Picture 1 (cartoon, rainbow, N blue to C red):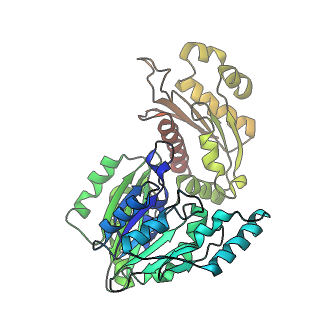
Picture 2 (picture 1 turned 90 degrees about the vertical axis):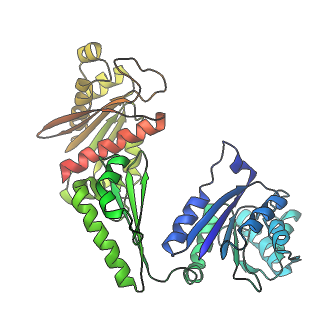
Picture 3 (picture 1 turned 45 degrees about the vertical axis):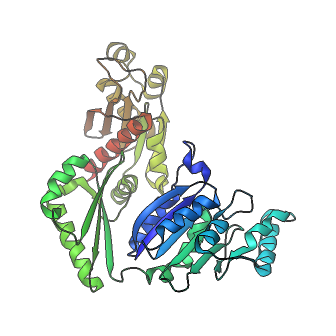
Length: 411
């Protein structure tokens, strides 16, 4: 089974809105054993939607469309489907009444006339009810062809429940025995990971291995298919053990968990607490830590001491060190970590200070230079790092390295 994903929306072709739906749907399909053959982004134009649908005909048995199912004149997915497949649009009075009642429930207002557009359905299509919004989804099996078309609303909160409701139906289209694992790696660059694992993956098609890199980490996606589930699992487990041998403690999760969750679990298990002092990362580390439910068990305090004055008054950084070495320096990072640990009374303290750019760099202290310190009862270690990328990427690299420093100390 090959699927083709089409994201509809003129705004997706501008710099101001990204197509994130397709990526998430592709991941869900992959877990079901359905291969994605293409992803397209098209404007709110029924002719263009029809053209892309036609181009996918004969190249796959499943077309998934997101967006363009709303009530306004620029929502053209229904028209695009009908043109591509030469089907009439039929008005469904039952779904029209349901849409109007749903609108009343959600808004406590009387429905506008344009909601009637959402009740037009391509001939033969099945209605997929929307449990969150008003726009219904559509499932269409094209007569005489091994083709299914699934049209979903654009908002993720609306299409996710629809995909969940169709999970068994979609799974029946995919490969039956498939096992997927995701390993997440810190402390190594993508090229280093590939170099270490290449002897095990070169020329091997099952399991397949995809390497993905981001400022947060490097991920290995391992996917195996076989005649039965047990054998597929054995193929994946064998590959995981080979990777474990060459990557060691750099693998921080074998179950696709983010670094902040792994670190949080370790803190909880060991009964330890944490406080952080951030400068160039601007609160991103605190955000990542507190984005994990239950982080109040171990996270005591987060400060953003952006100015030199704040570093002195809040954390007790020595003004002479600031004057002599500058805010972006090893002594200042060390004192930030030690100061916030003392302030919070925590077991661990982290200090981050650096130059996130794009301005502010000098030949001696270029953009991307970051000092990251970890303090505990037995001492303090400071790492000097030089990260590349834009401002957000440098901030993300910095917080990931800080979390990994703590993880390695905990294990």
